[in-house]
Image (cartoon, rainbow, N blue to C red; front, side, top):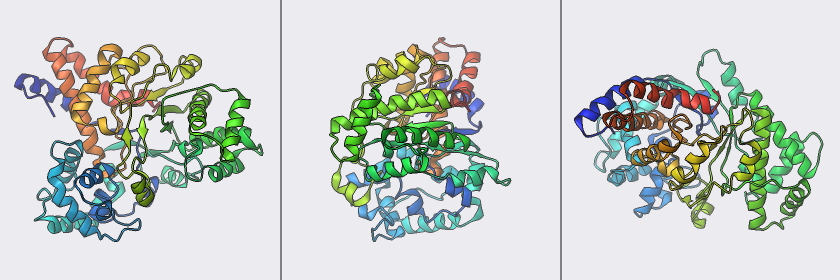
Length: 457
């Protein structure tokens, strides 16, 4: 990951040494809090490392292997060892990919595997990993400590009672910080399965006796406050587009009622979602939660796979997104509001230099979201840093976001980011664009201070 030129590589190594052992701050991800609360031993290697990782299963599926052969449980008949054999046989497919790097790093530095996977050694590696996963050294809490994680954020349903988070916070034997994140997508998107029933449950449980749209908004406010009281620092929104709109209360209520009666169109759904992104910003100004936005993904692109396997199974595909006009209604009213922090992410890297960096270079509320999903890969990270720095400098970024469900890949992902930052800064030092002393200050700020600043940690 470091520069090939020996002189620049030497500078990069010195920079990396400043941050390589700093604690991991992970303010956005998808690890389950209950895993750390209960300290439950991990399952077999395939169930842990293959089946839930859509980065992995999608590429193997593209080579012609049915998802049924890769997904343990969930109604499929494949045995863990069989799924692992499919993965081991497909291991060469991951050469040059970010997934291959993370898994190779995990195999070497977390599990100390004796060899890389192959069709020939599949069963032997399965047994080697399985034995390690059964040992106390590989329990979730021990790995949390070994990984040097200081803060880990989960992603949670608005009606989650957050009992696991409360138990972790009260446990004197666990010293890490695990915080919930308010994720209301399923209560905002009209097309979400069970939206009407789910919204009614929300209003009934937290709407202070109000009905309809008024109760819905009050319930959102109340549940956000509940999350704040349980340690949350942010809300996360996987909107279809980046559009924000300020609708009148009557218009918003009419759209809400259309959806409840099954009469809302796709256009209605987009308009209501845009209005709710504005409302989430308004609430963030009041309650202090950092607002993160993850738009621009066509979710569940292959209907047959979605119907059979559900969400997050590898067929979510990016599409172009525009931010400048889309965010203006929200930023007009809240972009300079004291204490408001807004972090837009993108998978459309053409907007980094054209839109997101200029927005962050003016609005004190806007921080640049780190490379996300298909872009959290070494070359894309370098392109990101080059694209945003000349316009917005180093201080306006969110810090690295691993956004992972794969707990054991967290240190590999953060290590990748730190190496890329060292590589980029080393080039600036070698070209006399930044002094070496200043570069040592900058890399500490990027790795450690930036996520604390952006997420109010």
